[in-house]
Amino acid sequence: MRRKASLILLALAVFFAALSPLLRWYAFPRLAKIPPGQYQDMVLEAKDATLLDYGTMQARKVPKVTIVQTLKGNVEESEKIERTAGKDVVVWDGLSYVVGPDGKMVSKIPERYIFDAHTQEPVHATGETVDGDPVKRQGIEFKWPFLTEKRDYEYFDAQTRTSAPIHYKGTQDFRGVEVYYFEQTIPWTKVRFPKAMPVEGITPESVAKTGTTRWYTTVRKFWVEPLTGAPVYGEEIHKEELRGGTLLGDRDKVTAFAGHVKMREDYIAYTVDLVKSNRTLVLLMTSYLPWGFLVMGVILLSLSLYLEARGRRPGDPKPAQDTEPEPVTA
Image (cartoon, rainbow, N blue to C red):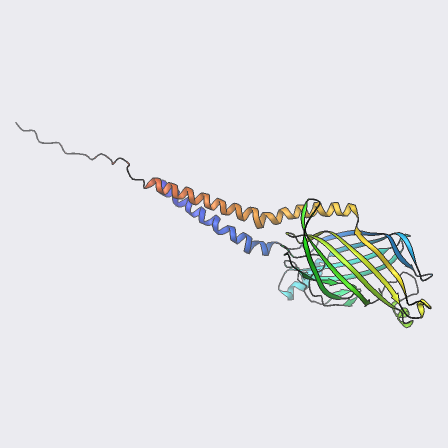
């Protein structure tokens, strides 16, 4: 009976020991993915900012500029691309909508971002655009990979339509969450005018005829929770200028927008809570369950060996042997 129990325990020990690395290195990379229908929004603000009044073409100080960013998963498009891509694909239809202190639109830039649901690497397909212009992204945008590493990444900048390194700057604590801090600087670069302009009758084509150009620079900062790859907080020190041309009169340049853009407090609290919840799920598959199964395997193996040793322990009394009766002599 002991030997049978020992063999059962040994089989269970082997099962749990084998399940531990399989869960971590095989199951997790295949199960961890961004859902195709995910929707999220974010509100950022630049207080005491500088904004161009297109009516007078003069830069003025304003109490606040608001940026609303939305990302909506397009399930129908992702399924179409998956048929030819041979992998799980997510299609995000994004919109960056900038509003002045009077509630009027300053600019709006739509995007379509197509990427691998597991690795967050871009997937190049028809429809990959920024403000209606076809692009071919390199590197990440919006989200880092699961199990983010302490290294630099390529990050796509929608204004310049190019990718540049975003540098790992160290590990920090952000409201009780361990995060990796990343920073990217985009130097002054000539960029396109948004197709949706804030004043009726002004179009990118009409501005181009005046010879005036638009220039942009930013310092982009992200605090990223490494297990989920999700930013818990972000900032930008953002500047835009119009330069040259008859639109500015005798001026060489004028500030179109300048401000320190930060996430609004209520969205920070919501994002931190959401990331903490998702972080627990990732820990379950990468740490808690694999280590738990390994410890369980060791315990079961120890019990199996103990029972086997008990079954073969020397010094136990031998069973009594039957003896034949001796003959009786007269």
